[in-house]
Image 1: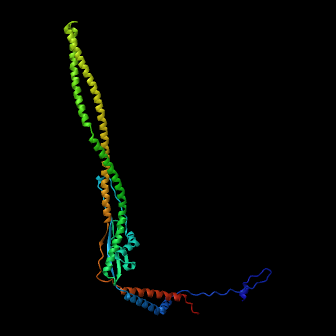
Image 2 (image 1 turned 180 degrees about the vertical axis):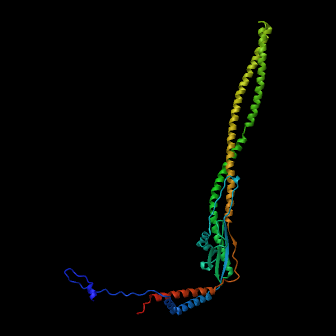
Image 3 (image 1 turned 30 degrees about the vertical axis):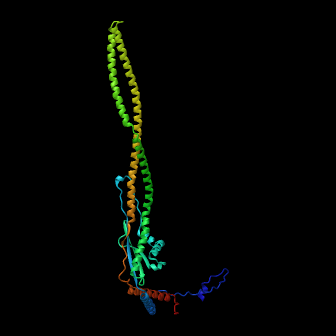
Length: 390
């Protein structure tokens, strides 16, 4: 007490203030030894055993009361089709449809798919179909191909035939949607390509018809024959004109040499006039034939230009049409292959034996889980228990 009072500080003026002592704080040792854990577990061991045995008995009773089941499986394979258009087609059309096992599982478990299965099996409740399970496999999964299994489990009252029928109906209903998904891009592209090919074919037919109409009234060969005949005629006229000019020159020279006023000179002048008249007539014919030749050549040139334009139109239209037409056939082939890319490779068959119940594994798992849960409860109960007074 004296020590406590001595530790009290003095106030100014020499007086001291008395301060009560602080209460002592009790400290507990929270260290847990292995012996204490063992004692806790041993004290709760009867409860652990009872709970584990009870869980095992309940699991065994559940398996015993559970009826027999039959499981049938249908395996579907989806393969990415590979199509390469010929290089000569000039127009390469290719569409890739993406589908993986996850997307396939979503389609298989979709309500619309299940309703189609119900309609096929003539049941009004999804529970009447049994337990439906879709899983990836068997086989590896890749970007080129994968397999999916449709598993259907039904009770013994439904029978193995029902399990197989439901599995096959489920696989077919799913494939109906999958094929629609795979062929939808090809169908849309095919419609657009068909319109384009039809337009190109119509243009080709119109160009061909115009060319046929031109050929029906084509005058080019007749104009060429007329020009050839006119050239030959002009050549004969030129030759005759040359002869006349030569004869006229000779007669003119003889007439100049003959005495004037004589009958011989008069005859020569008359012959000269005749020759010059004929020559002038031939020159007129040559001029007329020249104008006629120019008209024929102008008409022939216009027809040649029209024929060239029509042939160019036919050539361009035929090239466009015959380049697009093989692409349409290639797209139709790809659509057919895409529709056949998904198929049932292993249809479900009625199983010979019911599904194994695995009673031993179920009971062992129940005992283990019950024992662990009871052990955890024992240790938690010991942890929150008030400590016994020392």
